Picture: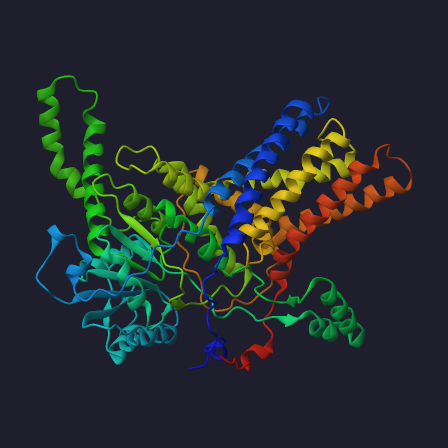
Length: 608
């Protein structure tokens, strides 16, 4: 069966980034300088630059700048140093993965590979099954593949039987994917579990390259990078311009490339490339033992998941009973009530290896990292060991991103994981998880950054006391050094896509924040694996509004300057650049709403 991605099958994944010590030294030196300059800028903003005639405007902006600076501090700590966990040889028997006191009789290692599916094309799942069957290992292995079908489909069962793998379904869909995984664990007994989505195509080397980490008996899971092999290749700028403008466009495109280097148009229209997240952000959390699980393409130690789940189960029972007995002063009555309640609470409390939550992966990671009974460790393995499909339209992309944002905010606001007496994270782990949550709350101050230049362009009211030499002396060095620092900190990857989507997602993340604040249950929409058809401009109305209003503001500001109505044009010049940068950040999402795949993709034959 032919899929839109069939012609991309021979694509090869990128190798892990290698950061030269010189690049790391430059990054760390510039990062320290940027933080010092930033702290001085924030100090000056609060103490010397407020416009006391417009505090309604000036204070929210300086608050936004302060909160953004805190985010920069957290991000700097996250990116500080590459700390890979040394890769170890593949274990031969289960005893190689256990502490001496936990040793068992010599036996093969048991591995279960779960393919969680609901309504995806069964032929797509067949591809994942076949790649899972091709996994190799240098020693004998008890390796089994299980299709966990929450769709209860007869045709999916037939595919599993044809491919010779186990088919598992359940009577209900309680807990969605987390419940599906729990059912799979109940029906299997492998020492290790590989979690796959319906489209996760594992490479033959996944176990050979990752099981060695489990020689450390405290390693609970290994996350491998996710790689989307179906991202559009795009076209060189001169070729794209030639299609639009003929030979004149080609000449213009070549001229631009001579100035700034090769440019590609149409590559990754939805900012799907996850290399920045896995190869930079998550990989550099290894040193803090804070690389969290991201679901697909991860390998879990069953003992760790079950041990933490059982401890959490007992804690939940004790908390529930304590809630009703706390106010009793008579110890005997208190004990009798607790004893009477116990069987009922036990019956009503769910044992959840994976939390029934839209973000069950990061939730489970926090529980395991903070397990007071045993400090489980995690590993972010740098090498790509699987391939999967990316969202191919803006609707699918936003469904996925909304789940990430709303789930993370819900955990941060309601689960009290940082203050719970049952979870004991280290200070660095709290900082790293806090960095993740902080990045989603940034939608609040990002909204201020998008609105602030509009106020100035339309009203002429400055957010600072004056755009004078002290402003430039404080702001420009901070901005320039900060940009240089993060250029070296993310060396080898273009940071613009990440910055653009970080700002452009403000409206969706605000909706996610509203959902979490209201305590509304976050629906688990399965991310579609096929291209959705239709016009998606309705999804980018906030971005279009920012672009339209900013363009009007820029035009109005230009008219005012041309007429000589502005006493201090430097403020307008700054806000013109600011507004233009905001438009540049919004445009990729608008273009993504209009993007349609090039028909030549279906006939493209990729070389190796």
